Structures are given as structure tokens and as C-alpha cells.
Length: 156
Image 1: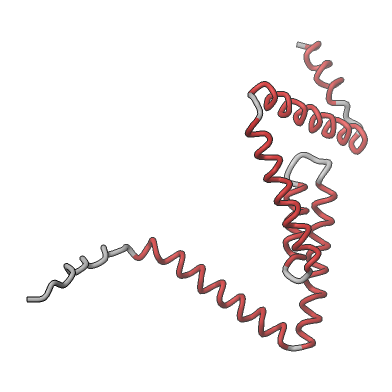
Image 2 (image 1 turned 30 degrees about the vertical axis):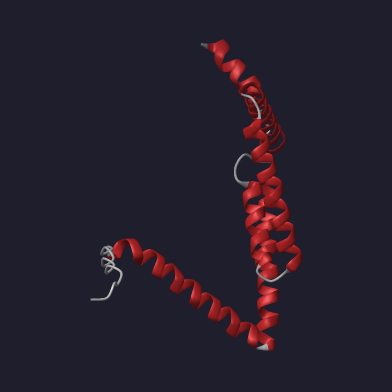
């Protein structure tokens, strides 16, 4: 009788629902990658793709820049437009990497601070956003929110 290692137990059965989204996602990525390569293989397709990515990225970045002074996801939309540009342009990929690094640095710095500093930074952000909202409403719609709230409280 020879000394052979004990047989390995069979792998536990996995449910189809756990593996299914990963498989579906990888299939989509493969399809998108193949389509992208097919388009880029043709000189006309390559130019059309560059122009399409440039125009789509510009539209999204422009929308994001318009929304930056307003409360909401203005900067997030700008980064989405930059991500669209990064599909075709190396400078956009580099800028996106730089932005990610700076955001991670900022997040780590905030996490390392004490609670009073975090609260102070949060209050500073809240005051800034409130000032932007007040200025936007005052200049664009002619509504002085502070006066309206004062009048409402005085009437009660």
C-alpha cells in the first residue's frame, strides 16, 4: 500500500444567485471591450469615438460646472465627465488619478483629526454651502431667505 495524500473533499455547492451577477458583469465587460476594440480598429470609428467621447465628456463637465455653486453633486458630475474623457485621453486619466489621490489624502487627514476639528471643518462646509444657497437665491430669484424667515417668525 502506498502513502498517498487523503482525497480532497468536493467543493461546497454554490448557489447560482451569488455567481450569476459576477458572471453577467464579466460578460458585459467582455462585450463592451470587444465592441470598443472593434470600433477602434477602423480609422473612421476611432475618429468618431474620439469626437463622441470629447463631446459627451464636455457636456457632462459643463453641466457639473454649472451645478458646482448649487447644493448637490456638482463636483461628482464634473468627475463623471472627466471619467468619460479618460476613456480616450491620457491627460484625463492622469488628472483623474491625481484627483483620486488628493481626495484620499484629504479623507485620511480628516479621519486622523480629533472630533472638534472634524466638527469645525463640517460647520465650515455647512456655512459655505448656506452662503452659496443664500447668494444664489438672492441673485437669481430675488428671494432673501434670511428676511423671509425673519418676517415669518415675527408674524407668529
